Length: 266
Image 1 (cartoon, rainbow, N blue to C red):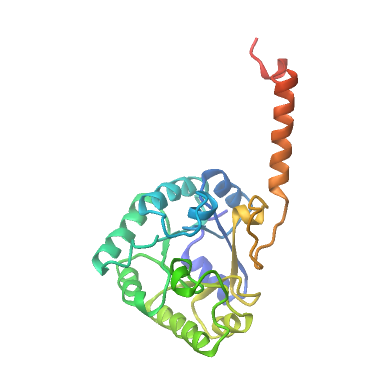
Image 2: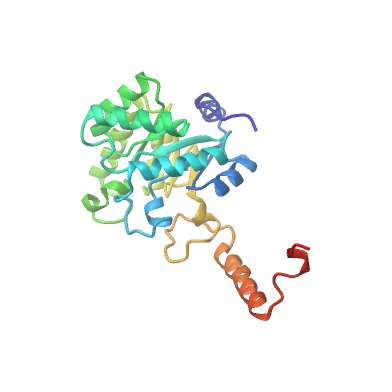
């Protein structure tokens, strides 16, 4: 697999070829993504919920994002790796945001950073792109604004939200974001945005018309059982497969059949 770049991804959009993206946080799952040719790996701040067991993404720190991205980069050396900038790592000031984004790129070897929001981050997007840091935007439902939005929900069903999402996307595109994640919005809105944009759109709960789709690794392999948003498809029942392996291990240890001579040194 050749290394995936911004040019690779924009070429796929121009040719009408769909882009695959998986969000994950560790070396092993990232390596699996590379082995099957996934285009992009997103180190999402969703690790706060999926990996750490939290209720929101808000407590995730910049240090944690750097730590997980280093592991992912080692596993997905040819994939295009994108890093979520966590809550309050880019909202305090423009200077601090640029410094933090630059640090992420320098220390992790990632290809791009991802920022949530529209007009409020447009100047930052412009500055980052102009100093050589590719930026992915994120509009619609933005998890870091969960309290302002009143919980996890679809955004854009009322006209005011519909128009605001379109405006936010346009502002990000004009500022230089080459890709924008569209999360939890009506299919028609995502289709309208995608058909009129030069920037790549990646859907998560935004219907089939986006240029690509993203799911969390642990969701799509069925390891997350307690929550299942409408947009998640479980391709295998991973949790039951893992439980079965653990049951067999426990049973063999208790009955004394593991380790056998095959797993023992002479």
